[in-house]
Amino acid sequence: MKIATRNVKIEQRPDKQPIKGLRKLSMPLILLILSVLLCVVILVAVSFGSTRIPMGTIAQILLNGTGIFHFARGWDPTAEIIIWQVRLPVVIGTALVGAALAVAGVLFQGMLRNPLADPYLMGTSSGAALGAAIAFVLPVDTVYGSFFSLTPLLAFFGAMLTVLFVYSIARSDGHTPIVTLLLAGVVINAVLVALQTLVLTLSPHAQFGLQALFSWLSGGVSVTSWPPIFVVGTIILIGIAFSLALTRVLDAFALGEEGAAHLGLNVERRKFVIIVVGSLLTAAAVSISGLIGFVGLVTPHAMRLLLGPRHRLLLPASALGGAIFLTLADLLARIVIAPAVLPVGIFTALVGAPFFLFLLRSGKRDYRW
Image (tube, rainbow, N blue to C red; front, side, top):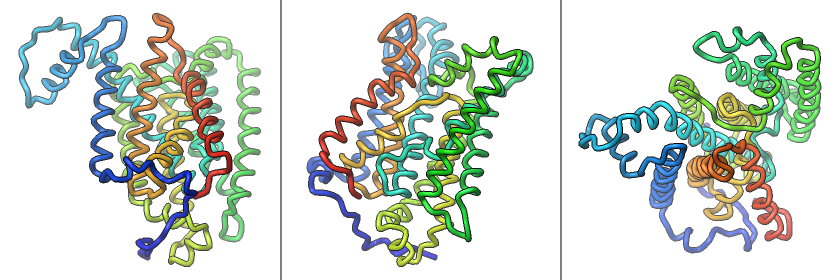
C-alpha cells in the first residue's frame, strides 16, 4: 500500500530548525558539495603515510586506473603499488563503514523517534564481539589459513543472529513494543558480554588472540586486500539503496506509530524491515572495522540539525557525512602520534563524545522531532 506522506509535517523546535543558509540550497547541490568533499578527504587520506605521495599524483594514478585517461607516468612505480594495494583498500573500507553506520543510525533514530539511538542499540555490538572472540580463540591456522578470515564472517553472523533473536523475544501477539525491544536488547547484550568473557577464560588458545581481539574491539579498518571490500561494499551499498526507499516510511514514523498507521502504513512490517536493513548495515560494517562508536550517533544528529528532519535529504547526506567523518578520524588517528597508530574507535569516542555533549548542552532541553 502506498503511503500518503506528501502532506506529513515533521515538528521541530524553533531552535532546532535547519541553518537558513543551508536550507536555501537545493538537495542536489548539498549532496554534490558533500560528494566533492568526500573525494577530497579520500585523496588526502591516501596521500598521508610513511611515504608521502602528492595528491596530484594520486589523482592521476586513479584516473589512469579507469582506462579513460592516460597520464604520462612521471612518478615512482612503487607509488602505484602503495596506492592500489595498501592505502586505497583501507580508505575506501573506512568510508564505506562510516556511511553504513551513519545510515543505520538514521534508520534507528527515525524508527524510535529518538536522536540518542545508535546502530548498536539492539545488541549488534555484543553479538559481533562474541563472534569475533570465538574466531580469535580458535587455532591460528584455522582462522587465518584460508583466503577469507573467519573473524569478519563470525562477527557478521553473530551480529545478525543477535538482532533477530532480540526481535523474536520482543515480539508478542503480532506486535513489537519499542520498550520491550530495547529492554530485550539490553538483557541480551549483558548475556553475550558474559559469554564472551567465558569463552576467553576457558579457551586454551585465548592468550594467542587476546591482543588481536583487543585491537578489533577498539575499532579500526585493517583490510589488506580488495576482496573483503568488494563483498562488504556490495552489502553496504545494497543496504543504503533499500534505506533510500524507506525515506517516506521514516517520515511517517515521525508522527508516532499510531499516526503512521492512520496514513495506511503497516507499522509492524515496516518496523521489521527497518530493523533488518539497519542491522545488516551495522553487521557488514563491524565485520571489517570492529566496534567504532559515535559515528552512527553523532553524524545523523548533526545532519538533522544542519539540514532538517526530512529523510529524503537527511539519509543520503548522513551517508556522505559519515564517510567523511570516519575517513578524517582514521587519518588523524594515523598521524597524531605517528609512527604509532591510535585505534580509530578510541579517536571517534574522544572526538564524538564532547561534540555530542556540546550539541545536547546547546539544546538545553530534549530534542523533539
